[in-house]
Length: 204
Image 1 (cartoon, rainbow, N blue to C red):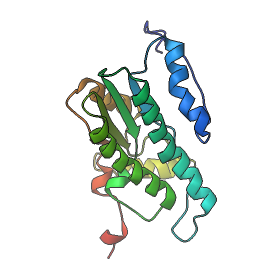
Image 2 (image 1 turned 60 degrees about the horizontal axis):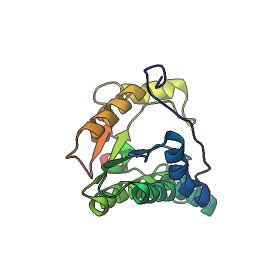
Image 3 (image 1 turned 180 degrees about the horizontal axis):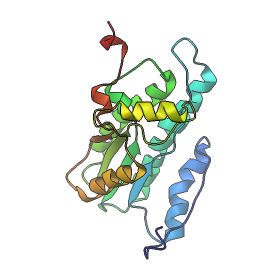
């Protein structure tokens, strides 16, 4: 789509559980495009189900490595590689649930909640030339844990009666690219799900 619109695009891949491969990804991308990378979107994520009583060290490490350590490591490399004073933007794909916590998907939620705090902290640390923001999707694509009917029901239950399409996530990203005064913020593109999410405190 990028090339058909007249732009240039290259594809890269790396195992984000590998610290060396993660560190080299930004540098290799800059070499491929022939200029420093000025926009980093951290969207890769692990989303496995567990609870406070069932989670394991393996599941903990898998979520924390992919959802927290890798984005922060990429942000560090991104900031180091950007020419001094050059504008840059980091956008972390988080989850609306960090604004309305539930005990479900325990280690996933902890990793995303920590990434939200890291987003704000990095916005402070990397200012003024690098901005750091986040997007918190709601129901966008059916997860491996859902049937089609369950996904449709979750989507219909949002305040607006709809989820967030991938195109809307891109629109939120475009806004963050254009809004040069916005940093340390998260846009919840979730149909208002975070305002009515069913959590234990609402069931008392």
